Length: 600
Image 1 (cartoon, rainbow, N blue to C red):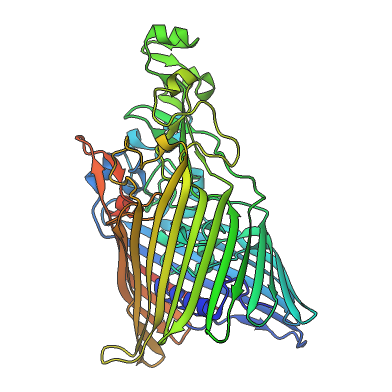
Image 2: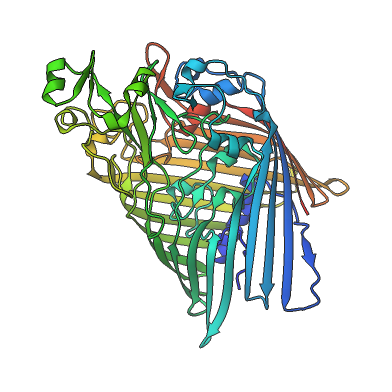
Protein backbone atom coordinates (compact mmCIF):
# COMPACT_ATOMS: atom_id res chain seq x y z
CA UNK A 1 0.00 0.00 0.00
CA UNK A 2 1.04 3.63 -0.31
CA UNK A 3 3.70 5.08 1.90
CA UNK A 4 2.25 8.55 2.11
CA UNK A 5 0.12 7.94 5.23
CA UNK A 6 -1.82 11.18 4.93
CA UNK A 7 0.83 13.36 3.35
CA UNK A 8 0.07 14.89 -0.02
CA UNK A 9 -0.31 12.04 -2.50
CA UNK A 10 1.56 12.53 -5.77
CA UNK A 11 2.47 10.34 -8.72
CA UNK A 12 5.92 9.58 -10.11
CA UNK A 13 9.29 9.48 -8.34
CA UNK A 14 10.39 12.92 -9.61
CA UNK A 15 7.23 14.46 -8.20
CA UNK A 16 7.78 12.87 -4.81
CA UNK A 17 11.34 14.19 -4.62
CA UNK A 18 10.24 17.63 -5.73
CA UNK A 19 7.53 17.84 -3.09
CA UNK A 20 10.02 16.92 -0.38
CA UNK A 21 12.34 19.70 -1.48
CA UNK A 22 9.52 22.18 -1.89
CA UNK A 23 8.15 21.61 1.58
CA UNK A 24 11.62 21.87 3.10
CA UNK A 25 12.49 25.02 1.19
CA UNK A 26 9.17 26.83 1.36
CA UNK A 27 7.84 25.96 4.77
CA UNK A 28 10.68 24.67 6.87
CA UNK A 29 10.55 21.29 8.56
CA UNK A 30 11.82 19.36 11.52
CA UNK A 31 14.64 17.03 10.51
CA UNK A 32 13.67 13.48 11.39
CA UNK A 33 10.30 12.71 12.88
CA UNK A 34 10.46 11.31 16.40
CA UNK A 35 7.15 9.51 16.58
CA UNK A 36 5.80 6.93 18.95
CA UNK A 37 5.78 3.52 17.29
CA UNK A 38 4.05 0.88 19.35
CA UNK A 39 5.56 -2.58 19.69
CA UNK A 40 2.48 -4.70 19.06
CA UNK A 41 4.30 -8.02 19.14
CA UNK A 42 2.73 -8.82 15.78
CA UNK A 43 4.88 -8.26 12.66
CA UNK A 44 1.73 -7.77 10.59
CA UNK A 45 0.46 -4.89 12.71
CA UNK A 46 2.07 -1.41 12.70
CA UNK A 47 0.75 1.38 14.92
CA UNK A 48 2.23 4.86 14.91
CA UNK A 49 1.28 8.06 16.73
CA UNK A 50 2.90 11.40 15.78
CA UNK A 51 2.46 14.67 17.65
CA UNK A 52 3.90 17.98 16.47
CA UNK A 53 3.94 21.08 18.64
CA UNK A 54 4.65 24.46 17.06
CA UNK A 55 4.94 27.90 18.65
CA UNK A 56 4.90 31.19 16.70
CA UNK A 57 5.67 34.64 18.06
CA UNK A 58 5.23 37.45 15.50
CA UNK A 59 6.00 41.18 15.80
CA UNK A 60 4.68 43.82 13.40
CA UNK A 61 7.58 45.36 11.50
CA UNK A 62 5.91 47.98 9.28
CA UNK A 63 3.61 50.91 10.13
CA UNK A 64 -0.08 51.02 9.29
CA UNK A 65 -0.87 52.37 5.84
CA UNK A 66 -2.97 55.56 5.78
CA UNK A 67 -4.72 54.39 2.59
CA UNK A 68 -5.71 51.08 4.16
CA UNK A 69 -6.98 52.82 7.29
CA UNK A 70 -9.14 55.12 5.14
CA UNK A 71 -10.72 52.11 3.36
CA UNK A 72 -13.62 50.77 5.46
CA UNK A 73 -13.67 47.35 3.73
CA UNK A 74 -9.94 46.78 4.20
CA UNK A 75 -8.98 48.23 7.58
CA UNK A 76 -10.20 45.97 10.39
CA UNK A 77 -7.23 43.61 10.51
CA UNK A 78 -4.85 46.53 10.19
CA UNK A 79 -6.50 48.49 13.02
CA UNK A 80 -6.68 45.47 15.33
CA UNK A 81 -2.87 45.36 15.48
CA UNK A 82 -1.19 48.72 16.01
CA UNK A 83 2.37 49.54 14.98
CA UNK A 84 5.00 47.37 16.72
CA UNK A 85 2.37 45.10 18.26
CA UNK A 86 2.50 41.33 18.72
CA UNK A 87 0.53 39.91 15.77
CA UNK A 88 0.72 36.24 16.66
CA UNK A 89 1.45 34.43 19.91
CA UNK A 90 0.22 31.02 18.88
CA UNK A 91 0.55 27.39 19.91
CA UNK A 92 -0.47 24.62 17.48
CA UNK A 93 -0.72 20.89 18.02
CA UNK A 94 -1.21 18.36 15.24
CA UNK A 95 -1.77 14.74 16.20
CA UNK A 96 -1.70 11.83 13.72
CA UNK A 97 -2.57 8.19 14.30
CA UNK A 98 -1.92 5.40 11.77
CA UNK A 99 -2.77 1.69 11.95
CA UNK A 100 -1.53 -0.60 9.14
CA UNK A 101 -2.24 -4.32 8.77
CA UNK A 102 0.12 -6.41 6.62
CA UNK A 103 1.38 -3.24 4.90
CA UNK A 104 -1.78 -3.20 2.75
CA UNK A 105 -4.78 -2.25 4.89
CA UNK A 106 -5.44 0.27 7.61
CA UNK A 107 -6.79 3.61 8.64
CA UNK A 108 -5.57 7.05 9.59
CA UNK A 109 -6.98 9.79 11.81
CA UNK A 110 -5.45 13.22 12.43
CA UNK A 111 -6.52 16.45 14.03
CA UNK A 112 -5.20 19.82 15.05
CA UNK A 113 -5.74 22.33 17.84
CA UNK A 114 -4.60 25.91 18.38
CA UNK A 115 -4.66 29.01 20.57
CA UNK A 116 -3.35 32.52 19.76
CA UNK A 117 -3.02 34.88 22.73
CA UNK A 118 -2.30 37.86 20.43
CA UNK A 119 -6.06 38.13 19.87
CA UNK A 120 -6.85 38.49 23.57
CA UNK A 121 -6.57 42.28 23.32
CA UNK A 122 -7.14 44.17 20.04
CA UNK A 123 -6.13 47.77 19.31
CA UNK A 124 -9.03 48.85 17.09
CA UNK A 125 -11.13 51.72 18.50
CA UNK A 126 -12.60 52.92 15.18
CA UNK A 127 -16.07 51.41 15.40
CA UNK A 128 -17.50 53.54 12.57
CA UNK A 129 -15.64 51.52 9.92
CA UNK A 130 -15.87 48.10 11.56
CA UNK A 131 -17.36 45.33 9.42
CA UNK A 132 -18.10 43.29 12.53
CA UNK A 133 -21.84 43.50 13.24
CA UNK A 134 -23.66 43.04 16.56
CA UNK A 135 -27.46 43.55 16.68
CA UNK A 136 -27.38 45.15 13.24
CA UNK A 137 -24.78 47.79 14.10
CA UNK A 138 -20.98 48.02 13.68
CA UNK A 139 -19.08 46.81 16.75
CA UNK A 140 -15.52 46.18 17.83
CA UNK A 141 -14.17 42.67 18.19
CA UNK A 142 -14.03 39.56 16.03
CA UNK A 143 -16.71 37.63 14.13
CA UNK A 144 -17.35 34.19 15.61
CA UNK A 145 -15.67 32.43 12.69
CA UNK A 146 -12.48 34.51 13.01
CA UNK A 147 -12.50 34.10 16.77
CA UNK A 148 -12.55 30.33 16.41
CA UNK A 149 -9.98 29.83 13.64
CA UNK A 150 -7.51 32.60 14.50
CA UNK A 151 -7.94 33.10 18.25
CA UNK A 152 -9.18 29.88 19.76
CA UNK A 153 -8.74 27.77 21.69
CA UNK A 154 -10.24 25.45 19.13
CA UNK A 155 -9.50 22.47 16.94
CA UNK A 156 -10.75 20.33 14.08
CA UNK A 157 -10.53 16.93 12.46
CA UNK A 158 -8.19 16.62 9.47
CA UNK A 159 -7.70 13.13 7.99
CA UNK A 160 -10.07 10.25 8.64
CA UNK A 161 -9.85 7.48 6.06
CA UNK A 162 -9.42 3.77 5.44
CA UNK A 163 -7.28 2.20 2.71
CA UNK A 164 -6.60 -1.16 1.16
CA UNK A 165 -4.42 -2.74 -1.52
CA UNK A 166 -4.95 -5.88 -3.57
CA UNK A 167 -3.26 -7.79 -6.40
CA UNK A 168 -5.67 -9.05 -9.06
CA UNK A 169 -4.13 -11.05 -11.93
CA UNK A 170 -0.74 -9.42 -11.25
CA UNK A 171 -2.33 -5.95 -11.31
CA UNK A 172 -1.96 -3.84 -8.15
CA UNK A 173 -5.12 -2.01 -7.08
CA UNK A 174 -5.17 0.53 -4.23
CA UNK A 175 -8.27 2.26 -2.85
CA UNK A 176 -9.07 4.82 -0.17
CA UNK A 177 -12.27 6.22 1.29
CA UNK A 178 -12.89 9.00 3.80
CA UNK A 179 -11.40 12.46 4.44
CA UNK A 180 -7.98 12.93 2.83
CA UNK A 181 -6.05 14.70 0.07
CA UNK A 182 -5.07 13.51 -3.39
CA UNK A 183 -3.16 15.93 -5.62
CA UNK A 184 -2.42 15.44 -9.29
CA UNK A 185 0.17 17.09 -11.49
CA UNK A 186 3.66 18.37 -10.81
CA UNK A 187 3.19 21.93 -9.51
CA UNK A 188 4.99 22.63 -6.24
CA UNK A 189 4.44 26.19 -5.07
CA UNK A 190 1.48 27.77 -6.90
CA UNK A 191 -1.77 25.82 -6.51
CA UNK A 192 -3.88 28.51 -8.24
CA UNK A 193 -2.36 27.70 -11.65
CA UNK A 194 -1.96 23.97 -11.06
CA UNK A 195 -3.82 21.00 -12.53
CA UNK A 196 -4.74 20.21 -8.92
CA UNK A 197 -6.66 23.49 -8.48
CA UNK A 198 -9.94 22.73 -6.73
CA UNK A 199 -8.99 19.22 -5.60
CA UNK A 200 -8.98 20.56 -2.05
CA UNK A 201 -9.53 23.73 -0.13
CA UNK A 202 -6.37 25.65 0.73
CA UNK A 203 -5.73 27.20 4.14
CA UNK A 204 -4.05 30.40 2.92
CA UNK A 205 -4.85 32.05 6.24
CA UNK A 206 -2.72 29.54 8.12
CA UNK A 207 0.09 29.83 5.56
CA UNK A 208 0.27 33.63 5.87
CA UNK A 209 -0.04 33.82 9.66
CA UNK A 210 1.69 30.66 10.82
CA UNK A 211 5.21 30.25 9.33
CA UNK A 212 6.53 26.73 9.68
CA UNK A 213 3.11 25.20 9.06
CA UNK A 214 3.35 21.78 7.40
CA UNK A 215 1.97 21.06 3.95
CA UNK A 216 -0.56 18.58 5.35
CA UNK A 217 -2.16 21.44 7.30
CA UNK A 218 -2.48 23.70 4.25
CA UNK A 219 -4.32 21.28 1.96
CA UNK A 220 -7.62 20.64 3.70
CA UNK A 221 -9.00 17.10 3.35
CA UNK A 222 -12.22 16.41 1.43
CA UNK A 223 -14.49 13.40 1.77
CA UNK A 224 -13.93 11.21 -1.28
CA UNK A 225 -13.26 7.77 -2.70
CA UNK A 226 -10.30 7.13 -4.99
CA UNK A 227 -8.39 4.30 -6.59
CA UNK A 228 -5.10 3.68 -8.36
CA UNK A 229 -4.55 0.77 -10.75
CA UNK A 230 -0.96 -0.10 -11.59
CA UNK A 231 -1.66 -1.78 -14.93
CA UNK A 232 2.03 -2.38 -15.74
CA UNK A 233 5.33 -1.34 -14.22
CA UNK A 234 5.21 1.84 -16.32
CA UNK A 235 1.48 2.58 -16.71
CA UNK A 236 -1.04 3.52 -14.03
CA UNK A 237 -4.61 4.83 -13.92
CA UNK A 238 -6.34 6.83 -11.20
CA UNK A 239 -9.86 7.98 -10.45
CA UNK A 240 -11.57 9.94 -7.69
CA UNK A 241 -15.10 11.00 -6.76
CA UNK A 242 -15.86 13.67 -4.16
CA UNK A 243 -18.57 13.57 -1.50
CA UNK A 244 -17.93 17.04 -0.04
CA UNK A 245 -16.87 20.55 -1.04
CA UNK A 246 -15.22 23.39 0.88
CA UNK A 247 -14.19 26.91 -0.14
CA UNK A 248 -10.68 28.30 0.22
CA UNK A 249 -9.68 29.63 3.67
CA UNK A 250 -8.19 33.11 3.49
CA UNK A 251 -7.23 35.29 6.47
CA UNK A 252 -10.65 36.10 7.86
CA UNK A 253 -12.21 39.43 8.78
CA UNK A 254 -10.35 41.08 11.67
CA UNK A 255 -7.31 38.78 11.57
CA UNK A 256 -3.90 40.40 11.11
CA UNK A 257 -3.33 39.29 7.51
CA UNK A 258 -6.93 39.94 6.38
CA UNK A 259 -6.96 41.97 3.12
CA UNK A 260 -10.76 42.36 2.84
CA UNK A 261 -13.16 42.62 5.77
CA UNK A 262 -16.27 41.47 3.90
CA UNK A 263 -15.37 38.26 2.10
CA UNK A 264 -15.47 34.59 3.02
CA UNK A 265 -16.82 32.94 6.15
CA UNK A 266 -15.92 35.66 8.64
CA UNK A 267 -17.34 38.55 6.60
CA UNK A 268 -20.46 40.14 8.11
CA UNK A 269 -20.94 43.42 6.23
CA UNK A 270 -19.82 45.29 3.13
CA UNK A 271 -19.61 49.09 3.22
CA UNK A 272 -21.41 50.69 0.27
CA UNK A 273 -20.39 54.15 1.45
CA UNK A 274 -19.16 55.68 4.70
CA UNK A 275 -22.46 55.15 6.57
CA UNK A 276 -24.37 52.43 4.70
CA UNK A 277 -23.70 48.71 4.48
CA UNK A 278 -24.95 45.49 2.94
CA UNK A 279 -25.24 42.62 5.43
CA UNK A 280 -24.06 39.08 4.71
CA UNK A 281 -26.67 36.90 3.06
CA UNK A 282 -26.72 33.20 2.24
CA UNK A 283 -23.83 32.12 0.00
CA UNK A 284 -24.56 30.18 -3.19
CA UNK A 285 -22.40 27.08 -3.03
CA UNK A 286 -21.94 23.99 -5.23
CA UNK A 287 -23.47 20.63 -4.46
CA UNK A 288 -21.43 18.67 -1.95
CA UNK A 289 -21.15 15.70 -4.35
CA UNK A 290 -20.37 15.48 -8.03
CA UNK A 291 -16.76 16.58 -8.54
CA UNK A 292 -14.63 13.81 -10.06
CA UNK A 293 -11.51 13.12 -12.08
CA UNK A 294 -9.49 10.52 -13.96
CA UNK A 295 -5.76 10.44 -14.68
CA UNK A 296 -3.09 8.26 -16.22
CA UNK A 297 0.70 8.18 -15.76
CA UNK A 298 3.25 6.61 -18.05
CA UNK A 299 6.90 6.17 -17.01
CA UNK A 300 8.84 4.45 -19.83
CA UNK A 301 12.21 3.14 -18.72
CA UNK A 302 13.83 4.21 -21.98
CA UNK A 303 13.06 7.87 -21.30
CA UNK A 304 13.42 7.82 -17.50
CA UNK A 305 10.57 10.30 -17.31
CA UNK A 306 6.93 10.46 -16.22
CA UNK A 307 4.08 11.72 -18.39
CA UNK A 308 0.61 12.44 -17.06
CA UNK A 309 -2.80 13.02 -18.62
CA UNK A 310 -5.73 14.37 -16.60
CA UNK A 311 -9.38 15.23 -16.82
CA UNK A 312 -11.28 16.72 -13.90
CA UNK A 313 -14.82 18.04 -13.39
CA UNK A 314 -14.55 20.44 -10.49
CA UNK A 315 -16.10 23.32 -8.58
CA UNK A 316 -14.40 26.60 -7.82
CA UNK A 317 -13.07 27.19 -4.31
CA UNK A 318 -12.87 31.00 -4.69
CA UNK A 319 -15.92 33.27 -4.73
CA UNK A 320 -17.52 35.84 -6.95
CA UNK A 321 -19.45 38.62 -5.19
CA UNK A 322 -23.19 39.36 -5.55
CA UNK A 323 -24.92 42.45 -4.11
CA UNK A 324 -28.69 42.46 -3.52
CA UNK A 325 -29.75 46.12 -2.89
CA UNK A 326 -32.96 46.80 -0.99
CA UNK A 327 -33.11 50.44 -2.06
CA UNK A 328 -32.11 52.50 -5.07
CA UNK A 329 -31.86 56.24 -5.68
CA UNK A 330 -34.75 56.78 -8.12
CA UNK A 331 -37.20 59.60 -8.83
CA UNK A 332 -40.56 59.10 -7.12
CA UNK A 333 -42.34 58.70 -10.47
CA UNK A 334 -39.93 55.96 -11.58
CA UNK A 335 -40.36 54.23 -8.22
CA UNK A 336 -44.15 54.25 -8.56
CA UNK A 337 -43.90 52.93 -12.11
CA UNK A 338 -41.96 49.95 -10.79
CA UNK A 339 -44.65 49.35 -8.19
CA UNK A 340 -42.23 50.00 -5.34
CA UNK A 341 -42.49 52.12 -2.21
CA UNK A 342 -40.75 55.48 -2.03
CA UNK A 343 -38.58 56.13 1.03
CA UNK A 344 -37.83 59.80 0.55
CA UNK A 345 -34.92 59.99 -1.87
CA UNK A 346 -34.75 56.20 -2.16
CA UNK A 347 -36.98 53.55 -3.69
CA UNK A 348 -37.68 50.32 -1.81
CA UNK A 349 -36.97 47.96 -4.71
CA UNK A 350 -36.46 44.71 -2.79
CA UNK A 351 -38.07 44.37 0.68
CA UNK A 352 -36.68 40.82 1.03
CA UNK A 353 -33.13 42.21 1.07
CA UNK A 354 -33.59 44.46 4.14
CA UNK A 355 -36.39 45.40 6.50
CA UNK A 356 -37.30 49.03 7.20
CA UNK A 357 -35.63 48.76 10.60
CA UNK A 358 -32.47 47.47 8.89
CA UNK A 359 -32.51 50.42 6.53
CA UNK A 360 -32.84 52.86 9.43
CA UNK A 361 -29.65 51.32 10.88
CA UNK A 362 -27.82 51.89 7.59
CA UNK A 363 -28.11 48.28 6.39
CA UNK A 364 -29.50 48.76 2.88
CA UNK A 365 -29.22 45.29 1.36
CA UNK A 366 -27.39 41.98 1.31
CA UNK A 367 -24.29 40.57 -0.30
CA UNK A 368 -23.19 36.99 -0.80
CA UNK A 369 -20.53 34.84 -2.40
CA UNK A 370 -21.22 32.44 -5.26
CA UNK A 371 -19.05 29.50 -6.30
CA UNK A 372 -19.22 28.00 -9.78
CA UNK A 373 -19.44 24.30 -10.58
CA UNK A 374 -19.05 22.32 -13.82
CA UNK A 375 -15.50 23.47 -14.57
CA UNK A 376 -13.70 21.14 -16.99
CA UNK A 377 -9.94 20.83 -16.48
CA UNK A 378 -7.79 19.14 -19.14
CA UNK A 379 -4.14 18.64 -18.22
CA UNK A 380 -0.77 17.26 -19.27
CA UNK A 381 2.38 16.90 -17.14
CA UNK A 382 6.00 15.88 -17.62
CA UNK A 383 8.74 15.20 -15.05
CA UNK A 384 12.36 14.11 -15.51
CA UNK A 385 15.80 14.34 -13.97
CA UNK A 386 18.07 16.34 -16.29
CA UNK A 387 21.76 16.79 -15.36
CA UNK A 388 20.94 16.30 -11.69
CA UNK A 389 18.02 18.74 -11.71
CA UNK A 390 14.44 17.60 -11.28
CA UNK A 391 12.50 19.32 -14.05
CA UNK A 392 8.74 19.23 -14.31
CA UNK A 393 6.08 21.09 -16.19
CA UNK A 394 2.33 20.96 -16.50
CA UNK A 395 -0.12 22.54 -18.90
CA UNK A 396 -3.86 22.76 -18.36
CA UNK A 397 -6.94 24.23 -19.99
CA UNK A 398 -10.04 25.15 -17.99
CA UNK A 399 -13.44 25.40 -19.61
CA UNK A 400 -16.23 27.35 -17.86
CA UNK A 401 -13.79 28.86 -15.34
CA UNK A 402 -15.04 31.78 -13.19
CA UNK A 403 -13.16 34.97 -14.09
CA UNK A 404 -12.35 38.07 -12.05
CA UNK A 405 -15.53 40.16 -11.95
CA UNK A 406 -16.98 43.30 -10.46
CA UNK A 407 -19.62 42.76 -7.73
CA UNK A 408 -22.78 41.82 -9.65
CA UNK A 409 -26.01 43.52 -8.59
CA UNK A 410 -29.39 41.78 -8.59
CA UNK A 411 -32.00 44.35 -9.71
CA UNK A 412 -35.50 44.55 -11.17
CA UNK A 413 -35.36 44.08 -14.96
CA UNK A 414 -35.95 47.77 -15.87
CA UNK A 415 -33.00 48.78 -13.67
CA UNK A 416 -30.74 45.83 -14.52
CA UNK A 417 -30.63 46.89 -18.16
CA UNK A 418 -29.00 50.17 -17.10
CA UNK A 419 -26.35 48.76 -14.72
CA UNK A 420 -23.17 47.12 -15.99
CA UNK A 421 -23.20 43.36 -15.40
CA UNK A 422 -26.45 43.38 -13.39
CA UNK A 423 -28.80 40.38 -13.35
CA UNK A 424 -32.47 40.01 -12.42
CA UNK A 425 -32.45 36.94 -10.14
CA UNK A 426 -30.04 35.03 -7.93
CA UNK A 427 -28.26 32.09 -9.59
CA UNK A 428 -28.96 28.49 -8.61
CA UNK A 429 -26.59 26.29 -6.61
CA UNK A 430 -23.27 25.87 -8.38
CA UNK A 431 -23.93 28.80 -10.71
CA UNK A 432 -22.33 32.23 -10.61
CA UNK A 433 -23.47 35.74 -11.43
CA UNK A 434 -20.13 37.02 -12.69
CA UNK A 435 -18.05 36.28 -15.76
CA UNK A 436 -16.97 32.83 -16.87
CA UNK A 437 -14.73 31.73 -19.68
CA UNK A 438 -11.89 29.52 -20.84
CA UNK A 439 -8.34 29.86 -19.52
CA UNK A 440 -4.98 28.16 -19.92
CA UNK A 441 -2.35 27.64 -17.21
CA UNK A 442 1.31 26.64 -17.13
CA UNK A 443 3.64 25.70 -14.24
CA UNK A 444 7.31 24.76 -14.68
CA UNK A 445 9.60 23.78 -11.80
CA UNK A 446 13.32 23.23 -11.38
CA UNK A 447 14.48 21.69 -8.11
CA UNK A 448 17.70 20.26 -6.85
CA UNK A 449 20.55 20.25 -4.40
CA UNK A 450 23.71 22.35 -4.65
CA UNK A 451 26.82 20.46 -3.45
CA UNK A 452 29.34 21.91 -1.06
CA UNK A 453 30.81 25.31 -1.89
CA UNK A 454 33.12 27.66 0.05
CA UNK A 455 29.98 29.45 1.26
CA UNK A 456 27.88 26.53 2.55
CA UNK A 457 27.90 22.75 2.94
CA UNK A 458 24.84 22.22 0.75
CA UNK A 459 21.70 24.01 -0.40
CA UNK A 460 18.36 23.01 -1.84
CA UNK A 461 16.32 25.12 -4.22
CA UNK A 462 13.04 25.29 -6.08
CA UNK A 463 12.53 27.72 -8.96
CA UNK A 464 9.02 27.91 -10.35
CA UNK A 465 7.67 29.79 -13.36
CA UNK A 466 3.92 30.20 -13.82
CA UNK A 467 1.77 31.59 -16.58
CA UNK A 468 -1.87 31.86 -17.47
CA UNK A 469 -4.15 33.56 -19.92
CA UNK A 470 -7.79 33.85 -20.90
CA UNK A 471 -9.04 32.55 -24.21
CA UNK A 472 -12.66 33.73 -24.31
CA UNK A 473 -15.49 34.96 -22.08
CA UNK A 474 -18.66 32.86 -22.22
CA UNK A 475 -20.86 34.35 -19.46
CA UNK A 476 -21.66 37.91 -18.32
CA UNK A 477 -18.85 39.58 -20.26
CA UNK A 478 -20.03 42.97 -18.97
CA UNK A 479 -19.06 41.98 -15.40
CA UNK A 480 -15.57 40.80 -16.42
CA UNK A 481 -12.86 43.09 -15.08
CA UNK A 482 -11.22 42.74 -18.48
CA UNK A 483 -14.13 44.58 -20.12
CA UNK A 484 -13.50 48.05 -21.54
CA UNK A 485 -15.74 49.61 -18.86
CA UNK A 486 -13.37 48.53 -16.05
CA UNK A 487 -10.39 50.75 -15.30
CA UNK A 488 -8.79 49.30 -12.13
CA UNK A 489 -5.06 48.61 -12.00
CA UNK A 490 -5.83 44.88 -11.77
CA UNK A 491 -7.56 44.85 -15.17
CA UNK A 492 -6.66 41.48 -16.74
CA UNK A 493 -4.31 41.26 -19.68
CA UNK A 494 -4.35 38.41 -22.16
CA UNK A 495 -1.46 36.70 -20.35
CA UNK A 496 0.28 36.74 -16.99
CA UNK A 497 3.71 35.39 -16.04
CA UNK A 498 5.36 35.14 -12.64
CA UNK A 499 8.04 33.32 -10.68
CA UNK A 500 8.92 32.07 -7.23
CA UNK A 501 12.34 31.10 -5.88
CA UNK A 502 13.03 29.20 -2.67
CA UNK A 503 16.68 28.76 -1.67
CA UNK A 504 17.97 27.22 1.56
CA UNK A 505 21.72 26.93 2.20
CA UNK A 506 22.73 24.64 5.07
CA UNK A 507 25.79 24.37 7.30
CA UNK A 508 26.16 21.01 9.06
CA UNK A 509 27.28 20.59 12.68
CA UNK A 510 27.96 24.27 13.36
CA UNK A 511 27.77 23.09 16.95
CA UNK A 512 27.56 19.45 18.04
CA UNK A 513 24.13 18.24 16.93
CA UNK A 514 23.17 21.58 15.38
CA UNK A 515 22.70 22.29 11.67
CA UNK A 516 22.25 25.90 10.58
CA UNK A 517 19.98 26.97 7.70
CA UNK A 518 19.25 30.32 6.02
CA UNK A 519 16.01 30.01 4.00
CA UNK A 520 15.19 32.72 1.47
CA UNK A 521 12.00 32.99 -0.59
CA UNK A 522 10.94 35.45 -3.28
CA UNK A 523 7.73 35.45 -5.34
CA UNK A 524 6.85 38.10 -7.92
CA UNK A 525 4.45 38.75 -10.76
CA UNK A 526 6.61 39.61 -13.77
CA UNK A 527 4.11 40.76 -16.39
CA UNK A 528 0.38 41.19 -16.89
CA UNK A 529 -2.66 40.64 -14.70
CA UNK A 530 -4.42 37.28 -14.41
CA UNK A 531 -8.07 36.82 -15.33
CA UNK A 532 -8.59 34.28 -12.51
CA UNK A 533 -8.79 35.23 -8.85
CA UNK A 534 -5.33 35.45 -7.28
CA UNK A 535 -3.81 33.98 -10.44
CA UNK A 536 -1.12 36.68 -10.32
CA UNK A 537 -0.45 40.37 -10.98
CA UNK A 538 2.61 42.27 -12.14
CA UNK A 539 4.46 43.71 -9.15
CA UNK A 540 2.49 41.61 -6.66
CA UNK A 541 4.66 39.38 -4.51
CA UNK A 542 6.24 38.41 -1.21
CA UNK A 543 9.63 37.66 0.24
CA UNK A 544 11.18 36.23 3.37
CA UNK A 545 14.62 35.67 4.74
CA UNK A 546 15.94 34.38 8.02
CA UNK A 547 17.96 31.82 9.87
CA UNK A 548 17.04 28.43 11.25
CA UNK A 549 18.60 25.79 13.47
CA UNK A 550 17.89 22.05 13.39
CA UNK A 551 18.92 20.70 16.79
CA UNK A 552 19.60 16.96 17.05
CA UNK A 553 17.14 16.43 14.16
CA UNK A 554 14.38 16.91 16.70
CA UNK A 555 13.95 20.61 17.48
CA UNK A 556 13.63 23.31 14.85
CA UNK A 557 14.04 27.06 15.48
CA UNK A 558 13.43 29.73 12.82
CA UNK A 559 13.65 33.50 12.87
CA UNK A 560 12.27 35.15 9.71
CA UNK A 561 11.39 38.52 8.27
CA UNK A 562 8.32 38.25 6.02
CA UNK A 563 7.29 41.05 3.66
CA UNK A 564 4.80 41.82 0.88
CA UNK A 565 4.91 43.92 -2.29
CA UNK A 566 2.23 45.27 -4.59
CA UNK A 567 0.34 48.18 -6.13
CA UNK A 568 -2.85 49.90 -5.03
CA UNK A 569 -4.89 52.72 -6.56
CA UNK A 570 -6.69 55.34 -4.47
CA UNK A 571 -9.19 58.11 -5.08
CA UNK A 572 -8.83 61.77 -4.12
CA UNK A 573 -9.78 60.92 -0.53
CA UNK A 574 -7.01 58.32 -0.28
CA UNK A 575 -9.44 55.36 -0.22
CA UNK A 576 -8.33 52.20 -2.02
CA UNK A 577 -10.29 51.77 -5.27
CA UNK A 578 -8.42 48.76 -6.73
CA UNK A 579 -5.45 46.58 -5.89
CA UNK A 580 -3.19 44.38 -8.01
CA UNK A 581 -3.22 41.15 -6.04
CA UNK A 582 -3.56 39.87 -2.50
CA UNK A 583 -0.11 41.01 -1.34
CA UNK A 584 -0.88 44.58 -2.47
CA UNK A 585 -3.31 44.95 0.42
CA UNK A 586 -0.77 43.41 2.84
CA UNK A 587 2.21 45.58 2.02
CA UNK A 588 1.96 47.30 5.40
CA UNK A 589 1.67 43.94 7.21
CA UNK A 590 5.37 42.91 7.21
CA UNK A 591 6.37 41.08 10.36
CA UNK A 592 9.17 39.25 12.15
CA UNK A 593 8.37 35.71 13.26
CA UNK A 594 10.06 33.31 15.68
CA UNK A 595 9.04 29.67 15.29
CA UNK A 596 9.80 26.64 17.42
CA UNK A 597 8.67 23.18 16.39
CA UNK A 598 9.21 19.61 17.53
CA UNK A 599 7.68 16.21 16.83
CA UNK A 600 7.36 13.39 19.32
